[in-house]
Length: 222
Image (cartoon, rainbow, N blue to C red):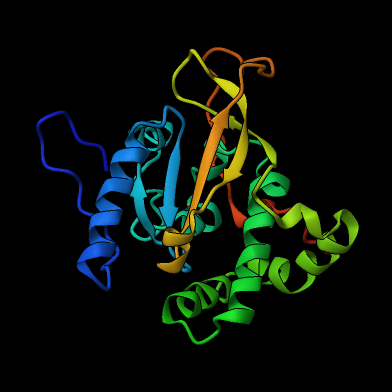
């Protein structure tokens, strides 16, 4: 969603209800691009409406996927993309389970939404992920507390492709002004932190996450 000086502003993916709302989103895209940290705006389905260059840079080494690219739908990326754990550190506890919990809450509120229903069907098609959704998630929420499912304020590990950052942390900040909220959108910014964990060994491969690796689902005997 970035643009260079003198070029046309990027068009938001959300179809605004009025010219005023469209103009607001266009100006908000300009504001988002001025933020040095990865920042995105998404709707209630987690479809990405706007994302800045810093966001695109963070996920630039992610491989192709037909339905779960981070710039298309951030929830699908977290849940279904095999490269998600290579960027989002402490993946299961810090990213996967909080996102799954927020999805479960959205289904309770907007269960009629076709986009959310499609994600729910995709979860159900994977026995391990379905077990995590139905059994592991409630147990995890009881164990860690309801506040663990919230994004805003959480400090979470990630691995940035820029070696100046490398293995680091971010503060997840949700800052959604009323006009954006009225459009059914949410804004998240990943504020990269200067204090970083030790970098991964040089040449180490990024892990590819699979649902079968979820430790929240108790292992069954063979």
